[in-house]
Image (cartoon, rainbow, N blue to C red; front, side, top):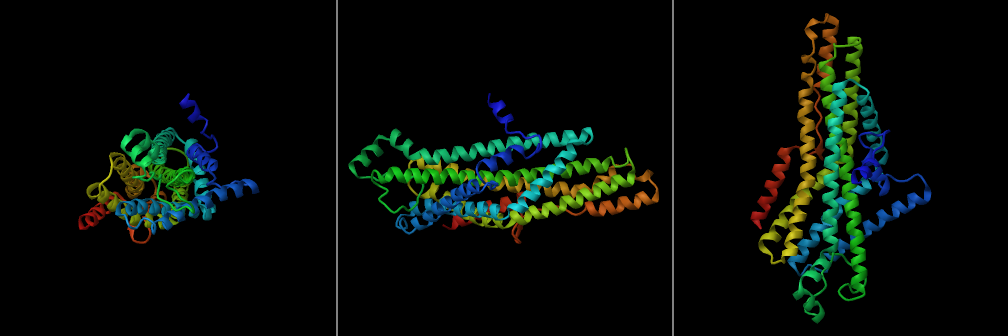
Length: 389
């Protein structure tokens, strides 16, 4: 049953991006064409933006408690990233659509190619589905744990229940945010939980939507690099050699063009995220080690820590894969029977190798490349700041 439900998300016109494309359309990240539906989608995004602003406002209300302050900073800084992700995606929607249209065009061309190319794209499609499903699942599990943690604490902890009833302890918040009424007493607490629950759910939507489409594109670029390597190795095994060389050259030029366009959309966001991630990891580790907290709070802190690490790791790992695969791409033509060709074809192969020598690397602003080494350096930096505290 569950498998049939997932199969309904597939789109034969967009074999690689189909489920992610439908996911973004459902949540309004791809703005609808109709005026009313578009306005409704924008309204949802505006309401979430206002909610994140209230998280920053609440910093001034909880600054007396270090534990509450660090908790607020984690969520509000993640909220800042979410705002940048969502609104940059909406503002640069044309560029994103151009990148996704390129992925679909190249994907369909690969699926109509030879058996090796078909097997290659099928392998990466299956891999992409697994990564997106696990990531989306982990995102929403984390969101629902955050939303329902006050209820879990109230139901499972008798001491907390008694303290709340006697007035010795305040109701636990879903997240730290400001509201223009008393959020520690009923019915204000109930409405606060609804607002904070909506804000947390939409945050999960923003995070999963942006990361799923971005990671899907990166994974496809890795698949296209591999497909080019396969085709350049077989460049003299069928058809007119010069046309095959021209076709591979054209594909690589187009791949570089859209990889750079994609990088221009994501690089500013990932630059901000790498900086904020260091601060979030440091503050989270400090909370676990030095501040008194319940087991429920410690579980939430650990889940948040793992989620932050997972986001960054997925970007760095897959970008690293693309970078090293593109470095190896120029060796593809040398696996062909180039030495049997005439001088004209050998000169063309030399030109093609020069084109294929251009590497693809995704960046976090102008300061660093997204690689596994960068990921390790960020963890080291966070640990260094943690030891200073």
